[in-house]
Length: 143
Image: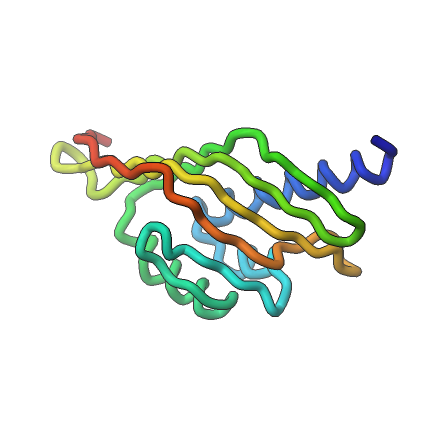
């Protein structure tokens, strides 16, 4: 690998991490800035929205408040770079707390993120995102 490819891989891996961090912290404007203007986002594997950035941000702003806490834990992404385009497949384990205290439940979602990226004048951005469902399971929990 040359220096440019190493730099691209680091930037893409950071972009994937920032994506999940903004999700967990519910930072919608910052999340939206990670995508290209014409990005397509498919959360259909878990019954979520399918559409562009505005529709996705609206969906997340309405859906995420039902969870007291979330934590997207990522495995290492498999990144393939082809010039100004790239793809990544990243495993994710996402526990989400429903409710608080003795009556809380933990919903665990296991998935793969499939990203496509485009190099822009502002750096790499997400051009496409699709979730692939592995499993979902509900556990009792206590916060």
